[in-house]
Image 1 (cartoon, each protein chain N blue to C red):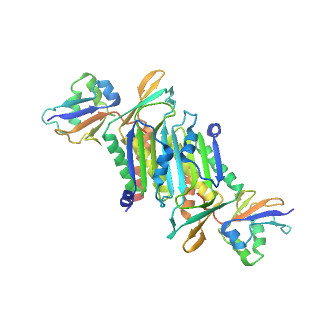
Image 2 (cartoon, chains in turn red, yellow, cyan, green):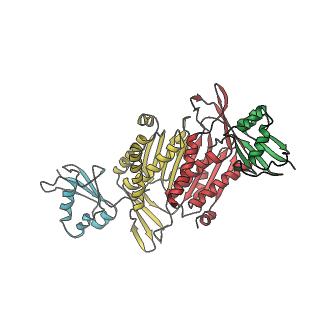
Image 3 (cartoon, each protein chain N blue to C red):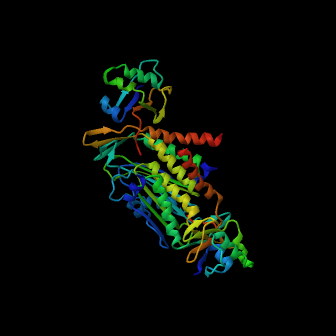
Length: 167
Length: 167
Length: 83
Length: 83
């Protein structure tokens, strides 16, 4: 039922160097629909500091082909768990500077709880399942960003939530 | 510490008849800052159906003066619990039609978890604490929308979360 | 000096009044006492006795124990439904 | 027919290789067996033995037990850090 409902909407994933238009992407999630009660979005930005060092720029590497597939799988999982009416994921690659947008996740749903949950779920899984890697430029030289344990914890809580609600 | 950090950013609340520009409002949350890691937003829309009836229009009544104060209090509570760098709340009043935007809540924070939590907290409290009332026009006539028990439950879980994390 | 009382939404509509200046009898010093006074008017005013009617004093939501006094702005309204 | 092997990010940089076609010895049929083969080259290749190195077969993340065969695309990379 939920997957079917989800299939009716637009589930669109892009990996691109270009920036995106937050207003246009958000509007598109509700365009031509009158059954959308809420749209939750998340925009990730490059910060000018990380782990105690200044960051002057960042380069995002990815695994072309697998990236799109991994993002598509994550969106599909969100559609099975909730019933989003439309979903949009955009992830940029290449060289970015502090203040630049990295990622956009937008979810339109009938009710706000579903929109928030699906949006945060997609971000948490994206952080641990999608093949992107960040290389930061700092005054001490370039360095690859280490994965955070807190991201694994954030992703794992959705499995715990699933077990809890099933059990 | 968190309240102080929050005070550094912009915490802006508006109650207005006019529509708002999602792209501009979202961009403003990160404007001129390079310490924002994520922006979570929520946009609430008028649906064309509710409780089994078609809805052709909706009029939002509010309590001028108290509304702004209640929204300000809710944002302040969010600033004490998390450390948002900037927050924007816009709630429309007057007559709206299906597909129209009702509310915008945007939160910029250093990390995504804080941005999501503060944004959802503000929405949940707004639903139960801010003096707005909806009157729907349906084929069966106009009717005042009843408060939902699910909204009380959603707001209450933040108190449970606070007790749990303190205890 | 009287209290200013405001009514909103379905309650305003049912009462046919959106605001009034009311001089409560001596000894009426709490929201619940004030409410009882208004309910005592009978007829549509008995709607104010409904358990789900909320109150605010000087624009903050309060419980029935909250005190009210001259010059206060008191409001009665149904559960809120914004967002 | 050989396997296509890809390396990404810090691992690609450390190995100095982004892709190779590799014909594994007979009997190498799992990700962990393939990995052991590559580690056996010694030197920088021992970095592939690190516990946090992830693997994908045909663009899906897999564990060491996953089977690999002729024509497969296998990738090794550090933990991901997007978003």
